[in-house]
Length: 197
Image (cartoon, rainbow, N blue to C red; front, side):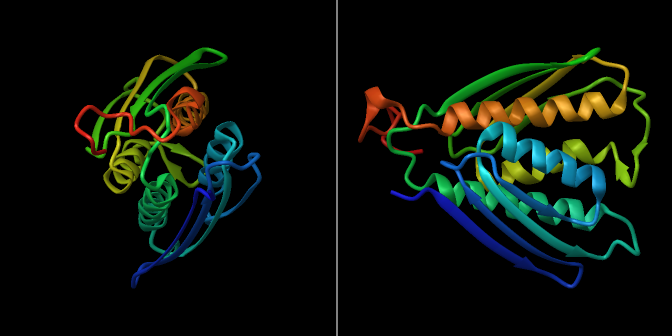
């Protein structure tokens, strides 16, 4: 059975298309107009082994905020759609990823209950190209709200802002991959004692 999601989201500020296949090979086609964000979404697809298409046309003449936020909202909605009924998945996933001097630890529960815990080093460089580094938390908040998952992201140390953000996206990709994969020992079983996720 196909596990795909397709979301189109249009406002006065942005037009977003996201297509996602959870059982892909990591093929990506990303264009948001924000170079570093494109790089991060590419990491998400490639390391999660999700086929991922993201096309965003946003009001970049103002700044990148709406473009980044609305893309994250659509991405979360597409992920939720692709998960379907969640029968037979692992549900939980975690991954720790180093990137030179930085380290990210990500744990996820595809619980149906949105909750985010996020910590990263203070006093990071404020910008990476056109990417405002304070947006990383907002991306995760937006994604979690639409995907309806519990997500804990912790960066205990790091110096380079590029590395600090990138290791978060790589670890997120792997944690989502592990949580959303089918468990061969639990075919046809919903991984919840409540009978609902």
